[in-house]
Length: 243
Image: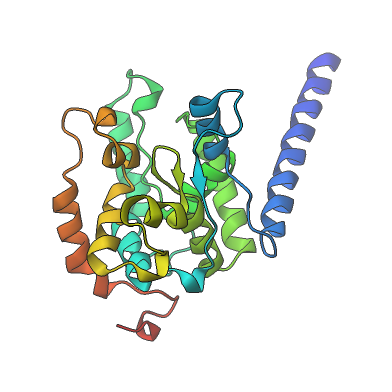
């Protein structure tokens, strides 16, 4: 039994060290911008292999230099009450749980998430693309650290600068140049809605070879986003956002 107790202590110590690493890394992002994410590194390896330079695009853009049109469009597309919740949307997670229970016996990759912007950020920054309940548990812990340590605006800034927007296209700076050859500050309502509609399946939006049967109806999503952009808040107080 001694070896079992020793092994348990080692596993617990490793888990604690890993959580401390996450907390320290997130704390540093109060002053420094993330250089890349776990998802971006995985994509770089997939596309580039051992060649470091292979066309991946990512240009950091400060929050104030990103069009409010794009910010609102992304909120409608991904998480319309981002500035009001504390990292998770329990109702959405319950719906995801119910759907996952209906899919018991299928591949783990079939699991659904019901993720908020903060949860997506936690996954992209630190975790693999595998979807299982252990990874989901770690995602929730990282989500809590992000929400406790960083203000909402900073979380949104990091998300907008790190999310995938096409094959090898990461962040709004690269996306606005890739699709429209303009700066993020100049994005119109229509351009913003188009970019936001891509987020559920950005590779498909960028290149038809990644689209599967029953792919997202991007024009319909864009129309929905345009119709709802003015109702979302860009601050914790819904009354404080300008139109």
